[in-house]
Image (cartoon, rainbow, N blue to C red):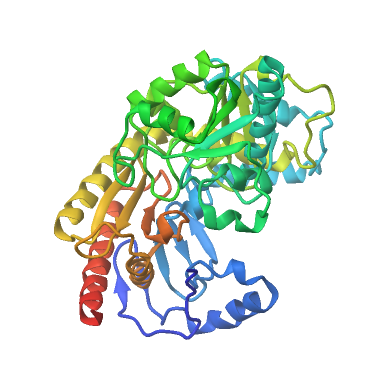
Length: 460
């Protein structure tokens, strides 16, 4: 069930720490006119996030125009890996805009050449050809096309099945939602393509069987012959829960795909560019996919995405048959080059690992205090805190919503993820966050859980 925030300003305690400041009601009374305008002119589907009107964002903090400041636990939905509003990225955008080359479709540009070369240099073999797009959903659509093209070429027209995972989120377009594993998000499709099948994700929490035999058994139960699988697509970690698969499972999956001439696709849209404590999320598994999909953190700012893959796969389609209107937009490329430079020069993957270790230690401590925390998942600077009903493992979306709302009122900002019925508190700050800011934001989370669980007990 979708939950919306009330636009009636709510009086909340004042907050003043070195990193957080709340000095108005929430939402800020002066912001209500803007929020009402958005409600009037945008679809209802846009109303899922806390009623905070962003005005300025720098580093790991977001400010409104009314004196409030939040530690950002969203990274703007995992975009601002190198930090919000970095001068180096702003300067690169301004310099490119001042050149008056704002777009060039698929006509060649020097800056697009620089970006695809840079990505090829820092990606491991065999991910050596790069196709630039605009959004993560586009990259999944492209990966589906490449998997099926490769499958049909290798094994005939029966080799077209795309295997993905339950509870996965891969985007909002037709193909990406059929690849996704959240049934409620694809009811609108009506006529689902039978060539898309989902198997359980081995998270060890909702799916207790983490053996690779579980993957093979699920295919048998759905009548899928391995020789007919064109590709296996998975989020490097599941976006709705931040859960990773066991490395042994992923290595077995890598071998299985190679043995059956199926492409292995890692959706790195949330996981790439240092987020998981390594430059690429798939490094956590000790293997490399055939195709990798990137977006969000690639530029820490502007819309850009990429598919990287084996040259023989990326070159399956002839000249002019795989294009996109905004492919490698020059201003977006400038932002991406600057962001990648920051991630590498400042070793933000390592900072993500170190700060992530601290974050996860705090979260596991909270899990011992609150039985309503059923699981803590994630690596590096992404975490999912699963809220469950007291005395059970049933997802508790109401508790998660209440915790998120209270955190926002205390100066910690986050977004509400899909998956597990909205019962996960998702934590994904910019990779420049500091130890002191981690401790400060976790203290707000602890207060929020304490207040929300007491209120829950009173209601019961």
